[in-house]
Image 1: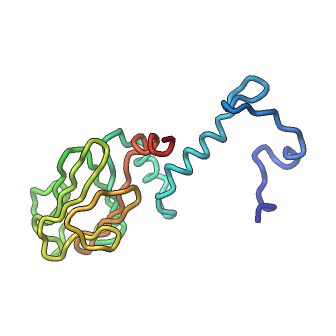
Image 2: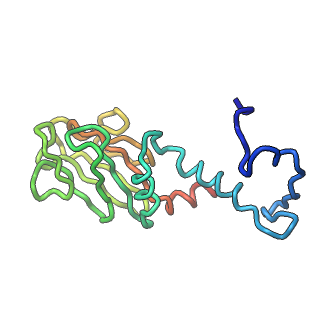
Image 3: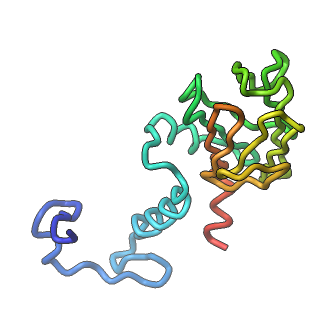
Length: 172
C-alpha cells in the first residue's frame, strides 16, 4: 500500500537527495522543517477524534480556548448539535432551565452535571432514573478523556477537550 502514496511535489521528488535535517528540525539550508513536527503533533492531538467528524466540527474543536471543551451529539433526537463547556458547572436535563436542554422522556429533568477542574472535566450523574454512561458503563462520576462517549438517555455525546490543553500532554 505504501507504493500507492505520492509524495508532495509530484513524482520524481523522492529520487532527489533531501537536505540534511538537524535534531532541532532545522534543514541544512537554514530553514525550519515544520512539516514533520506538525504532522506528529496533529496526529497525537487528533488520535481520539472520530473518523466521521466533519470539517466544520474539526474547526470548532481547533478553535476551543484553553479550559473549555465541546460535546457533540452523535446519536439522539438532535444529532449533530454542539454544546460548549466553558463554565465550572454545566447542568444537563429535561428542565427548561438546564444549560444543556435535552428534550426526551429518557432524560431526567435534572439528569447530570459537567464540572470543570482547571482544564479537566468530570461528568456527574444526579441520581437520574436512566443513569449516565461513560464509554458504555453506568457511572456516578467519571473524569472525561478526549473522544469519550457520554450517554444521557437516548443521547450519545462525544467529548472533545481543547487542543490547547492536550498539546502539553502530547509533548510531556
